[in-house]
Length: 236
Image (cartoon, rainbow, N blue to C red; front, top):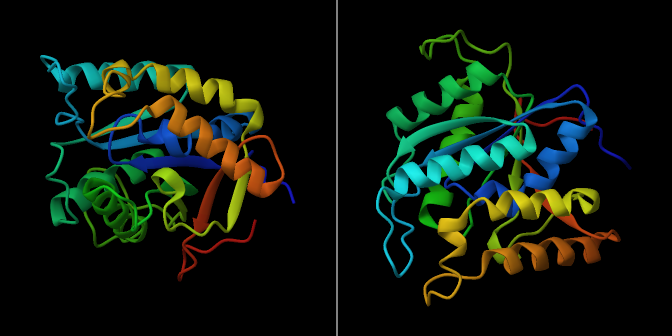
């Protein structure tokens, strides 16, 4: 079975700059290659991800890094603006993301698993799920008009594949080099590779893509699980 994203509008909702590169950039690149519109919404500022040698104005730097990465993909970038460690499923965060959905009008949303390791990832998961319903509710008022219907929603793999049972594998073999170049834009985080509380991101991403590829019989893959609930389930 081959999934074609030609007529789709694919939005990745992630917690931090560099999360999309780790978990779904290959799928976004494949969707873009198919002819889909693509976008990434980064809900948190990335302001707490300091290396051992602190960086001044880290929030502004990480924003520029994310924009540089998005240019390589040709994706539209949205920012939620929430400080790290403050994101929660609240009326405010729902309204911010509902407005992003209504501006971009995704047919498919890629979002963090609710079981991922980071609290911001889990919070982003909850907000993405709630907004995927409320974006089509005319009673939920934002600047933009309600969408005609909710988008489909796929949960992304977890970091290091911990506790995640894939239902869909997307072959991203051709796009692994682009995925790697996008991740290289996030120099502030790559500098944390030797920190005791972090990991070498490039190798982590490469090994995960190869492992999911080995499981699914291709060179490199990204794994997802559809959110099969009322109005969010789709036939592919």
